[in-house]
Length: 115
Length: 112
Image (cartoon, rainbow over all chains, first blue to last red):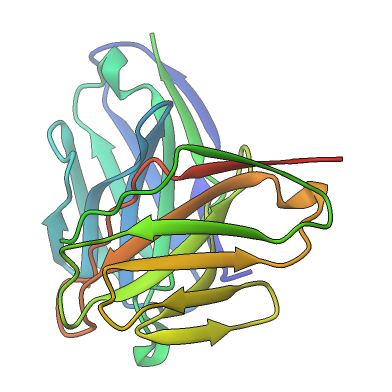
């Protein structure tokens, strides 16, 4: 267990409302990632962070923003949720102690439903 | 980022060896090859990683030919609990951004 948690684990919200998902790690990993997983698409990278206040876009970043104000927390925000953002969201971490970032440790996931 | 191609699904029986091959024709010099396993309702779990030749750990072996344009994940004597989705990924070196691309993976079904 790499010490990574996600909150909330489940959320149902309405179209147009803002939503923030939190990823918290206790292992001092440098890199943090947000993915979404949908049937038929596997996992797709939304945004990632390579340090405090250093973030970049992934392949499906439209409609999402992120923030990382401290090493242990990486927040994913949907400014105005849409039904197309109904998905399972996974956070991942890597790069502890200079180790290979290719070995990512995943959180338990957040199931988000936008009605 | 190098694109990977792997079979959508495979079937096997308990006790057999399973080999899943991944094609990555555009792999770059500094790319590593990594395999993940995902069970339903869980996040992916790292299995093995390699750069060239053969890598073995307690779970699997990874075979990478000299041209590195493909790789094969070998699972010895599978059991029903090995039923999962297996992802092959190719990623840049540690000096770059750390971005990885997951494809659709290979769904392995192990039958009794």
